Length: 275
Image (tube, rainbow, N blue to C red):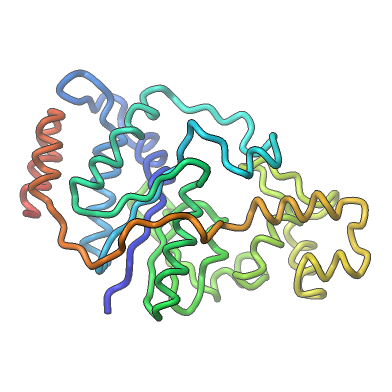
């Protein structure tokens, strides 16, 4: 049976925005590089993977999550161009026009929907492909779930399973939140344990099995509460609300009409060819 394809929408929209020329515009003069790049990436994924269905997950940037409330420095300093924000609002309707499922809700990050979708599929013994550049998602890798990680722009993807997580981090996928808590994560402004880098974090987890066991043994006593908070922040929330994930037949013609209405003729023509 074909896998469910789960896409981190924000991750790929950001990559498309920075990879394509800002000269790509809509008929009304508005920006379109992220729209075109993202749509082309989705088409490539559909053609390459032949999934049974597609779910694209999104952050809600206007509402803080429990992570921001528990740790105000979380993701501090991130600022997005107005032209990217404009396109981020337009992308979920484009995904819906394609006949794919959209997941977005206040208080949840795109990553949380990835975890919820994977849990839903694994509960039924089904496989998932998770397309994201966020390495927090390595915690989802399993015999049923493979991470598709972009390496150059949005055109090349590497497949990450449990063996690749072990090779890269020296820990099991289920230990990734503990590993991030100890090592820290500069992109999310998580400082980690003082004086601990990737190698020491992996060594600690090999010795004790978990952050909690290391704390119980007296390690990092002065930072215990902080490290538990960092682990909670790094753990994806599989309780995020999901739309129905039934098998899908793409509605290429509907998406082609939307793209045409935006004045994106080349994209419209490509979608129409799929139809």
